[in-house]
Length: 331
Image (cartoon, rainbow, N blue to C red; front, side, top):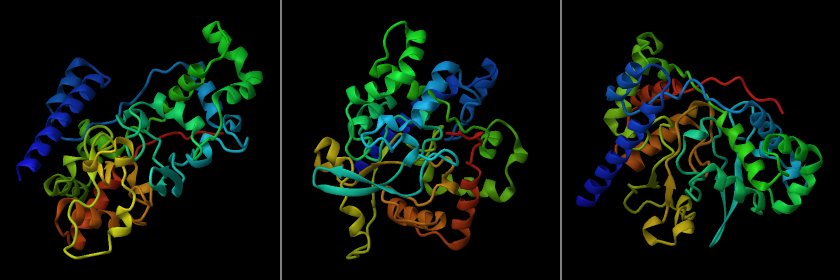
């Protein structure tokens, strides 16, 4: 019991820090930012705009779809993270781990700049770390940086020289890609408009769904701008007495492969719920095909509660309001 209280207190302090920092970054007058900070809601709206270097952004967009970043010359970032529609290919990809090879769902890219941890096991704490590793990862781009830079040089070196007054380097490619990923902002979800004061943005039923979302305990981990993505949680906190149906899901040990600590067995990054209505299948292993089934499982195994059909439908209705807008990206 005391361990649970300690974890809850830590989560509460972390949530307060995240919300305070995010409110300070909101656009608008100091009064508007102060109003958001005083707002007691656990979720914060995605910023309406980002100031990004347009030349670096365009270089990053082209590199995202450039197969010369891969060893086979055919794979590019957009091969798995498809843009449009939403930045994930809604399928599974192989991931090597210490004890074997597992399939994990391809992560969402829209609003990725709001994340504090990356990959399901939190292997990286910045986009720069993730991109550096992805190039040489045999399960991803499977090449060496020296080879990738040589292949890219004919089309990119002169352009980077104009920006940086030196030959193109690995850090330049990474920074361009990071800038592009920062541009994948999907703000102005109906729930964001509601948080900013538009009471008509949600129906009464959707507001009831949000109240249930908080009352049941979903907001303990799913909060902040990302509505998740910044905490780790054990998969299947509550398991059926003597039940075996969840055991196949527990073969992937998650964050344990990063830390080697036994307490991190089956620990995974809490996923963002932004655009969740569009991003089936769900969970790190893609084992749930529908949102209502995912909600039912999370309530039972993460919160220890059993929801009725009407409650599940209310939560589905609320989660649909977290779908943001983005003009899309053309290769």
